[in-house]
Amino acid sequence: MTPHHEMPASPAMTPAVLTALEAASASRGFDTRGAHLFQQNLNWVVRMPNAAPGGSVIAKIHTPGTEQAAVIRQVLTAEWLDDNGILTTRPAGTRRPIQVGAHLVTFTHDLGVGMGGPVPPEELGRLLARLHALTVPDHLGLPRLDPAADLLARIRKLPDHVLDPDDRHWLTSHLQAAGELFESTDWPGEPVVLHGDLANQNLLRTRAGLALLDLEYVAVGWALHDLAFRAWIRDGFSDAPRRYDRFCAAYGTDVTTVHGGRPYAQVLAPLRAAVGVVIALEASLRALDWAEEAAYRLMCLRNQEDPRFAYPWRWSSARIFHSFRTRFWIFCRAGAAGGCVGLIHWHAQMKERGARGVPRAPLC
Image (cartoon, rainbow, N blue to C red; front, side, top):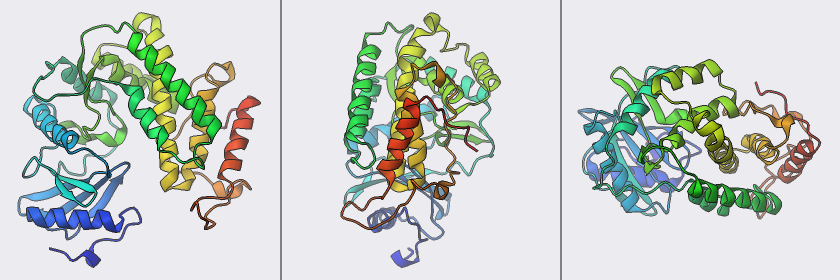
């Protein structure tokens, strides 16, 4: 077992996370030599290439406050999906997560680093068609889809230096209205098993096929909710329309045309946009170069009825901002709030630009 001080240094791996990883690994007999963090959003995901004689293992250190029942459900869901021909990561060892301090830790078999390159949209379309065709299992106790509830809880946790009171009030009201409209919409078809978070980092191309990762948001709901992810990549992130067309052809449905496009335009697109705003705001707590993107995303959402803010919005997930060129971006002065000088000023400038109808130039 590798001592704590020999673990690879990472600014995102706090001492509590490292301790949780090492203690949980020791309890399973896994070797942490060569372990490295390769993803950190709400949770920490670590690849351990020398964990066991049988090969590499992936450790997931869950954020504090994660419920054990929810983690166990994710493990059981992974087994059920794999048993039904949907490639995902099976648990390595016991199903039960290990509690170390405030963190739960789980281990899965490593599917490898993947084949690289963007996921072909037709592969995802075919995979989702197979997922949505499965009979909803009763034994897993999957939650009913409630997209607004999770976002509202995450907004409440954001500090005021990231989301000022005016924007917080507007975003909360926007989501409450979207949630009510979601509940009252007459969705086509029967409820299906949804993945719920089809971000690129949750898809892995392997030689055995496309795998679905991170089952935290698997739920029972309406298929159009999953399909809206791909439409929003086109509309919010300026992905090539032909890629979206290939996805629709493979799946067999275009969410933007169902019922005249009203469910997508009035419910699903605003919800997808709100998800993107919240993700960027949360990311700005860990990396301040996300704040410009978060402010721009919120400006787009608040001005969505303005024809000058028609799709595509040219959002970006690449953190290539030359923020130091602007006088609004002066940060890292120590203080009681531990925060940034100029962040709120910059955000106000971005809102002012939105009020004047000055869309931002495309990001590099």
